[in-house]
Image 1 (cartoon, rainbow, N blue to C red):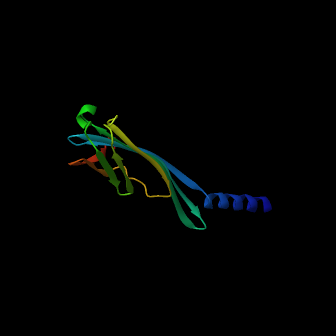
Image 2 (image 1 turned 120 degrees about the vertical axis):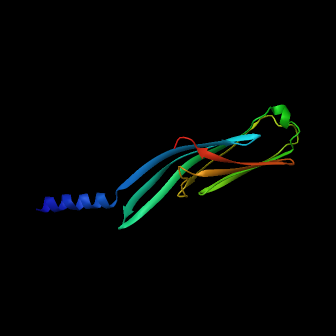
Image 3 (image 1 turned 90 degrees about the vertical axis):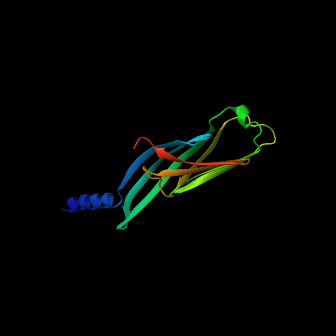
Length: 145
């Protein structure tokens, strides 16, 4: 009887501390007239129980890549570039000042977060780009959903 109670107690403890992991990988794409972008996010959600309460944590890595659709020569006179993206879970931005002509047409932001909000699979990511006296906005969508 004592062995049965011990085994039952161990099962209850493991069940109370159990967790469920959900992995996700999303890629959002879109473009405007002059710029195109890709936002990728991959992460893990962990749902569990502790002390009779539901627990949640989320960790993810993200990368935002902005690319000029024309040639490097076309943006050779560019002095400033400001870009941002926004999701319901947050966003990011970058600013570049050019004292000399740009040497690339692709610009990246990379990051990671823990215990933050999760980007949804059907999210619409808003992108804003300003370069010198020009401005463009467009949306990114998850094509794989």
